[in-house]
Image (cartoon, rainbow, N blue to C red):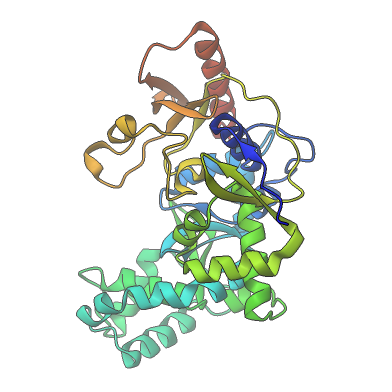
Length: 362
C-alpha cells in the first residue's frame, strides 16, 4: 500500500524554497561564492550586475570583488547553458549541464540558424578562428572576438555574431570566464575547465534532478522541465534514477519534489529582503504564482518586455520592487513597494540596503 505524501501549505512551500535558495540563513550554508553557485546549480545571468548580487546576497559577508575573483580564478563561469540563457555555474558542472540540456536547446534554434545562414561549414570556420584567437588561455572580450570573425570574412551583423558565440557555448566549446574591463573574456572550455568523469544518461539525469531540487525545491516536474528545457519524461526518469535521494510532498493537491536530506527551514519571517532582477527565486520555476500574485506581474515585468525588475520579498511573497541609486559614488537602493511597508519591513529593508552597499563597496 502506497503512503500519501506529506502535505505542505503555501506558506511552508515558500519557507522551504527560501531556505533551499539560501535567501534565508540555515545551518551549514555556503561559505564561499563558489559554494553558493554550486548549491544553486545555475543562476540566471543575462543581467551580469544583478546576478553578481544574486550570488552575494546568498553568501554571508561576500563582496562584489569576491564574485569577480571566483570568475577570474575559473571556479565560476558564465555560459548559455540552460534554455539558451546566460547562467552562472560552478565550472565543474558546465559539461554535465550541457550534456543533459544542450541538444534540445540547440534544436530549438535551428530555424533561426538557417535564417542567419549558420551552416556547419560556417560554424567550423568560426570555431577555427575563435580557437586560434583565444588559445593559450588568452581571454578576449566580445567586441574583440567579433572583430576577429569579421577580419576572417565571417559576418557578425544582424545578431549573427551573437548566435555564433551562443552556438559554440551550447556545444561546450567556449564560455565566458574572467572579467575583462566592462565585459568578460571568452575562453576555451577545454583549457579553462578541468576534465570531468563521463556519466551515462540516467546518472546525469539523476544528478541534474537532485542538484536542482537541493537549490530550488520543493518544485514540480513541470518547473524543472521548463527551467532546463527537458522533456517531462526525462525529468521523471531522473526522479526515478535519483531514488531515495528525493521525496515528494503535496501542495494544493499538486505533487512537488524536494531533496530528501533538506533540513527543516527556519521560521518564515516578514523581513523585507532585496533580491535582484531575474532572480532564481522567481525565474527558477515556470509557475511563479505562489510567490508573485498574478495581479502584480505587470509591475515586475513592465509592459511584458521580458525584463524582470529587482524585487522586495517578505514572508516569501513579492511585495514590491526596488531601484538602484548612486550618491557621491556610493551605491544605494530605494524601495518601490506595492503598498505601504510596515515599520518592521522598512527597518529590515534598510538593513538589506546596507548589505547591498557593503557588497558593492569593493
